[in-house]
Length: 119
Image 1 (tube, helix red, strand yellow):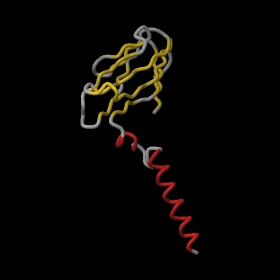
Image 2: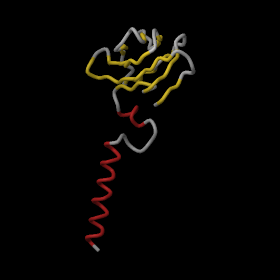
Image 3: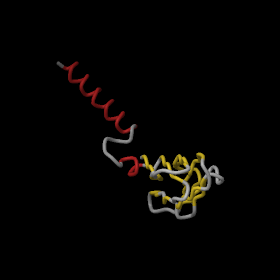
């Protein structure tokens, strides 16, 4: 009987560690624990449209936005993304006071169609 109880306790502890490592068990738990998050994490946007990305920084810290390929899409200081040409780019947001803390959004610019957002 003691072995069964010990087994259950160890199993419970392991499951708790796994859930914690995977971001918890509730929606939005990553935002609560991470110092910086971006929404959406993936985006498809047609030429001629604009989208404003959202960054959530713990403590409402200032952020800096960058595009890995400004010939595909640019982003301003407010997170407003403007497509330039068809292609793909990565939009990165970083804490202004700690450039090592970042999150990113993959962006695909298309010739037409609808805007699609993925978490």
